[in-house]
Image (cartoon, rainbow, N blue to C red):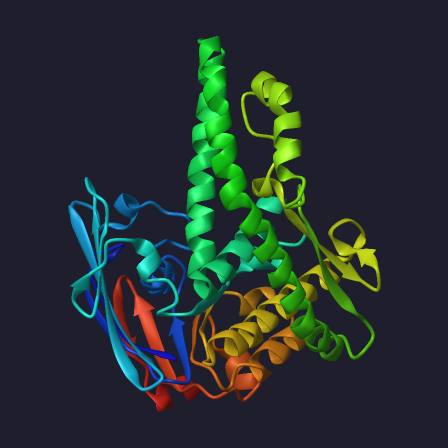
Length: 367
């Protein structure tokens, strides 16, 4: 699977941009705040309809404009797909696949499989559980449309239940309707817990060999899924927590409170690991994601490296670069030294400066 091209109109700092990628390594090179990450953001929108930076649609529209347009052409198993997105300030975004409008965002999931690796991911292990849940959801939504649907419905039910918990403080009679949202949370929450457990099991089958290689066979990495509640006891625990939820005015039980532990040689590195162990484990995690998606979809995903190489030491840079020769990779960076020193193939290098993108010639790279 490869991204052949991306066209942008009034997106972020780009008035008009058309950029064609090679199937190998594509490097977006330039100083900070020139627009490199914006191109990766557009690619991620074409995969998930959402920004990997968490930005809202109106924030991604060029200043002074009402709409932005993204057109992405991908090749997947020798078939071309055209993905169109229209971002609008006052309305929901428009999505089309091969010029046919889609009614739901979920219809686009799984067309373009991406893995995004940014400096924030290196801190995922030591940061709060929300980031680790986001990691599970990001991969599962790409691979499993049923999971995506369950997750959306669960989040809606949880939001409505939290809203009702606040309203009950003003009108006690509304308490009788709480059971309706309990039923919805249980209906969609149980399969989420089950699928997350399966996903972590599948990740462990891949990640242990990868991390053993990276650590020189010195460490064994194991992911442990920590559900807030099991499928079988969800209904009971939700009912049991009702008075506490009413007092705190939010839902305290459910998969929206799940977590994942990272164990090296049976030691929880979230709490007791060194920064080096945490970063190496995050690298192992990304490499395992690549392999798991390959295995699941029978194709290679596209890898987006958003200025992450500058955050890795030379050893981890080499480990990462050695693993990505067979997949299309789009890299943002402010320097090319690590590629030249490691003799890493520079298939196509783009200079990004003030919202303008140009291809750098080989003689300029060697200068």
